[in-house]
Length: 490
Image 1 (cartoon, helix red, strand yellow):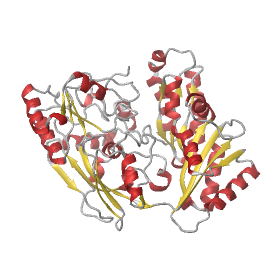
Image 2: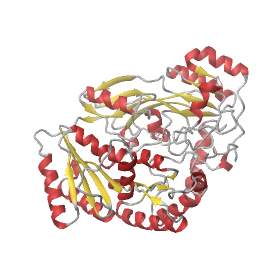
Image 3: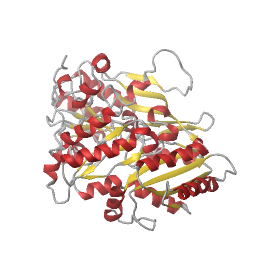
């Protein structure tokens, strides 16, 4: 059953919010609000009546209670780094954006429990730095970690570079505090590794994309800081060779693998051509590349020997055609720059269609080959630039417009391109959304992929917790689940 249409906020409501949050906590001038209404890719453009910036959970809860009582749509927004428009309001101008950047305290780090209690507005990089200063490690790592905030990272169940070893964000969450649509606070800040008392309600909010409530604070699991890290960039023929190399490292010691990333030759060419300071440290370009990173907290571990043994055998049997090992921290970061700048390079190359998909690890070569051929047939001259977390089966199958094509004309074909990729992903037992979420880009896919009892159960949960449909309307659920239309890509 469709949710009732959200209301426009009244002058009285905005006045009460101003009294509650103070001058720093409420933005209503159009010049102040507009920057919050566009995603970082500048594909989605909405409008909002105001931006709320609470400084505490109490302020957040009180503000949500006021908005919820009046039936106002609320769009939670962290660092606004969503790839799928998940934090962009619709075009009605009735929604209120709730930004948690002022809730930015690392409350405590427990070196015995190996936990961190952190507010939702702390950037992932700041949380990583705080853990490092305590001699520990927050293993979650994503390209946008300098801007992405903990609340958004958890609300989208971010994956990232180290998932192959530590799992997605969901696996790192021990406890959670969240504000529900009526302003009530869900108190679940527990540091327990074992707690089997009924449903694990915290996990409802992880990956919910702000549609059930707003995460305000979390307790995250930490790891001992690695004593040794080694990284290498390897040239390979294709994804099949990349998986053969992955198998060789797993056979040696799977506990050493911290990251294992795949990059296509076309994608690497864009990075080295368009991103200042990025250069290929190999003798010549290759059809594909692997960035492997080994790490261990063990004392006296000889990671360099372990890395050289596997690479030496791979070079001898032809799995790898060339490789370079980082000789310093600066060189390691330079190798990672080649991986992390793929999205920026594609942005500079023109319009791109992004497919964040996952398949069983063994099916990645088929995915890349079949999807590349399908998209080339659909759009002659299209430039496939797949890259990503091949070690856990998550590939960002991104496609850059043909050279010389009008960007708007290319983006007008985005659903046809995504559908062509999704058809192959479905045939390979995969998912159309691996780590970026559904957002406002892909709700139309939900009935075909998560229909029947699965989608019906999601709808029941949404209706039970948010009966008025005011929490991030337009995200995840198809348009017929509510009155809001997805923001239109520009």
